[in-house]
Image 1 (tube, rainbow, N blue to C red):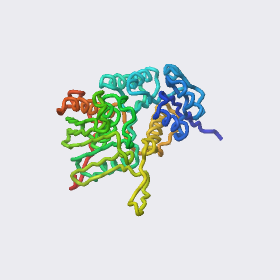
Image 2: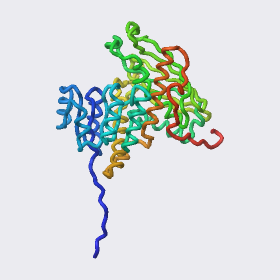
Image 3: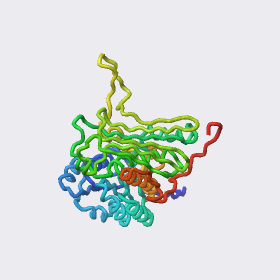
Image 4: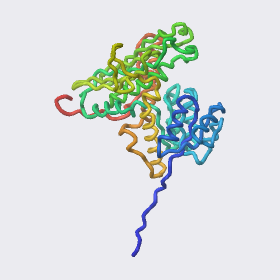
Amino acid sequence: MTYLQHPLVEDRPVRIAVIGAGWIGKFHAESIARRVPNARLEAIADPVLPAVQELASKLGTTKISTDTADVLADPDVDAVLIASPLRFHAELNTAAAHAGKDIFCEKPGGRTIAELDAAIDAAASAGVVLRFGFNRRYSSDFAAARKLIDDGAVGTPQLLRSLTRDPGTEAGLSNPERIAPGTIFLETLIHDFDTLNWLNPGAVPVTVHAVADALVAPEAKAGGLLDTAVVTVTYSNGAIAVAEANFNALYGYDVRGEVFGSAGMVTAGTPQATNATSYTAAGIASETSRLNIHLFHDAYTAELAHFADDVAARRGYGRTTAAAAPAVAAPGGVDARNALAVALAAFRSSETGLPVEVSEIAELRPAEDAVQLQGAGA
């Protein structure tokens, strides 16, 4: 007999280097090493050597450095996960693209639209994957809400709401003076802005009006702290959205979303850690999540699995775990740009007290087509 020739596809994990060994960098590194089967933690880089050494020992990684140039020059590194402080995001994104590395970057992708555009252009020119850490898209309830919207459950979106209340204590904020001005918009509410954009497909934000104050730590307001904010966003399809945030929810970490439309409403999110509820003489109670890595544990893992699948597909590794990630649109450059534009507009509005036209910040385009509605409920 004569054998048929069957082409082989290289089957190997995506080799990822983590840049940043802080809070979220540690968790992402652990996810890559232990929870994403089609990925391998290849290296860790952070200027603080003890943090790198501790994390590498915990996860069994031998390649460590205090210089990001080492991982960018390493031919065994396929992709980088950027979990450094915000001020380094755009520079690292651009450098990684120039080095031919696929990129997953924590939000936001830059401090300005110009910074982010440079990184997006560099990635496009290099032909590498560029993804951003908007993890709510991968949370099962938010993903289910988006599918209901796609299926026409709400008809035409008219009112949207998203909120983030960070867990707190009766003692209030620790070291509030260390929280940079604009953090509530650029690093907290930017999740809500992406969520609102994503749950209103085909539309772009047009006008933003923000009211913000230091209500949790008023003594730090003189230094620029804003710890409480409400932002109204109007969209090109006429929908009106509200996003709110607070840095000190005593009852736990609370993230929720809602879309009301011509045919109905969908909601997502709850502060409850489980569905278990106690009924006692003290009242009705349930446990709540206290950390982002607990509330969004599976979502963080799913977004990295999706990223690794995209990198494997681009590089022809032939090893994917598509079932691990919901069927959602991976947040790319346009999504990051749209969310950042709203955040910058909200920051400006909070300073002036006036509505801000998003076109003053950047000209935007929808990240995807609008949902095509059918039937009487449309």
